[in-house]
Image 1 (spheres, one colour):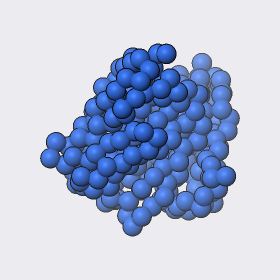
Image 2 (spheres, each protein chain N blue to C red; image 1 turned 135 degrees about the vertical axis):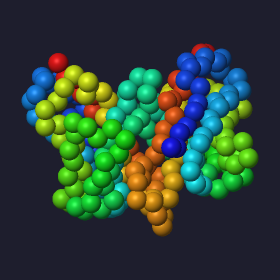
Image 3 (cartoon, one colour; image 1 turned 90 degrees about the horizontal axis):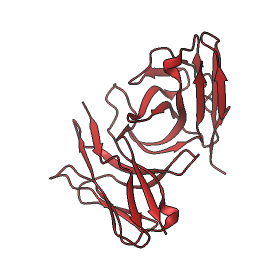
Amino acid sequence: EAQVTQNPRYLITVTGKKLTVTCSQNMNHEYMSWYRQDPGLGLRQIYYSMNVEVTDKGDVPEGYKVSRKEKRNFPLILESPSPNQTSLYFCASSIRSGNMNTEAFFGQGTRLTVV
Amino acid sequence: GNSVTQMEGPVTLSEEAFLTINCTYTATGYPSLFWYVQYPGEGLQLLLKATKADDKGSNKGFEATYRKETTSFHLEKGSVQVSDSAVYFCALTLPSGGGADGLTFGKGTHLIIQP
């Protein structure tokens, strides 16, 4: 079954304690991305990756890091989480046609609370 | 920059009512347009898409037509069911040009269908 898998689904942590949210896709997609979803703001892109070892900032990258060492995995790293990073996070991978993303597949989400 | 505007709701309808969720966009270029649906506790799923003017996307009884002249992509369904209760996101993407390459989302419309 084609899917994007995120872990954990729920996480409560304390300010400043480094954490990693994992994301893995089994569709051999080149393009992967991270979004955060906040009430009244919709989804905003944090970082994206067009292929292995190629990553770039999205609209709200501050306080986050990513890596893309393998095609299937795209972890999101919070080196020093702060309460304003409390949010619902989604990983996505996309089919590309030419130079355009045609359809995104989303993970089930990670609800992060930073206290 | 690019943006998507949609009614936020909640939109509450009775079962079998006609549904319209408006979506308009601004984009520098010629975007592809999407509707995604998010059921409670789940990630986003692609509902339908259209890649060029006058294209009609359709799925599960939902339809939306790409109107370039009015920069709109309104979602419609003739007879809604309780199971259609969800949050609906309108989104666009553009051919990559070196900048952020992901989806630009509207803020989402929460739809509630009452029996």
